[in-house]
Length: 386
Image (cartoon, rainbow, N blue to C red; front, side):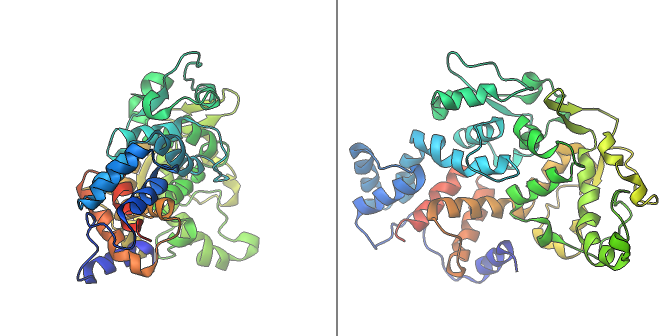
């Protein structure tokens, strides 16, 4: 059973949960305040910050104390940067340079922009500061130089749009998925299935093995997937179909995108599927031939209904933007953000005893407008006395 499922069960069955505003009693207010600041900001608090936070905790408002830590520059420059950077590359390493994907997430968190728009909006954050190269669709110099000169991301990030900065049509922008960093990592070469897979990993906390479903029809699986790998059709029927029958109809949303290694930038060919969608067509001539960027979520039925798709979304559409709205509207998306924040501030994965509280934090996240700072505050308070 997935963590998201356990969260829902725990929430339904829990008679009571720890109050987010009640300070744990395992340590004094000063010790709790220091631990809270360390977990959120990654550095010790100043004397003034410690006094303010200890006073809030003594007064029964630990969330106010957490908000002091959330105002620290190191929360943006260190904690958030280290959390997000692995999402931006295939190696999932924290040691990648600062880029537009990471900067945009940091800016969205700072400005309390609803995070369920992160996979669909025409949004980009650039870095202010003298001497920096201009943001470019063809290189990462703007962000790499900002990092090299230790520009404070808390005060120097500026909200703009990908369409204005990179020249991508506004209708073709899809939040983090169409940032230069994501494009360079996941739209390069291949078949664009990498963008779908890593979006699931980074934003729904699931890899393809966890969403396999061999009960979905295979009619939209592309020609490049052999129906008899190694001469054995059972491999396709019992394995390959489990991923491709759900992935291929949704990855069709990316049909017009490619990261061009000659131009070194994202290319969008409106109305014309990229050649990569037709490679290895001889593997199975009767397979699906991509005509456009229309997509369909076939996981709304079958075992992946457990991801709890938003009934307000149509479940099908055209292009990456509408697919991003579909993915970010799921319960799994909200639960995933809470799980990642929990690991960041609690220094461990959730346990069975934590699930009721995580379900509450997730529900508050959704009801509060998908503000990630709220998740950090509530989660850090929960782990403060541990």
